[in-house]
Length: 155
Image (cartoon, rainbow, N blue to C red; front, side, top):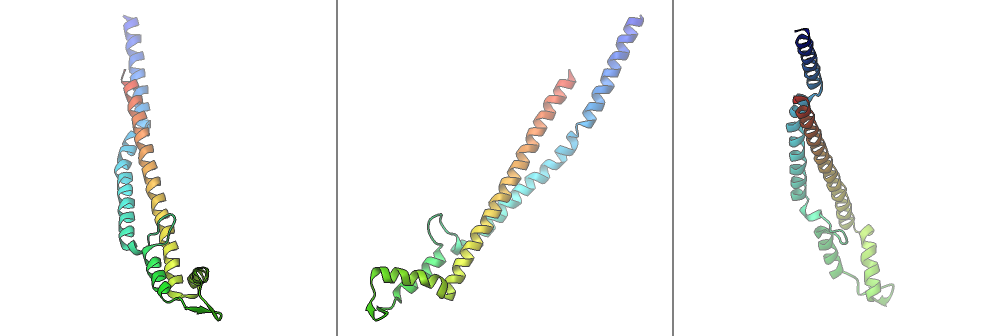
């Protein structure tokens, strides 16, 4: 009889230990944070989409200028002087003049600065999205681990 009583006490101690471990896992806190991280990712994606929509004219491709800069350059290209320094303008002179306009022409310089700014802010948005994704992936991985731990303790 004392053997059964001792087994029962051991079983109850193990049960209490498992209960304590389960409480200390913090699974409820993680589950409560999950919607917060999902909302953060959704917000970051929405902000990027909104920013892209508002900045459409200033979005540059990896190897070329944005639409606004191209528009201004096209206008300037039509106004290249026929004579520079007393000589007829060559293709090289024309290219050099257009390159110089990137700093001399206020409208073009402003558009280029805006293009750079938009690119920087877009990269910040992408970073925020990646961080939100990583936080969400991490919490899901921890929750999967907690599930395995709970299943182990349930045995």
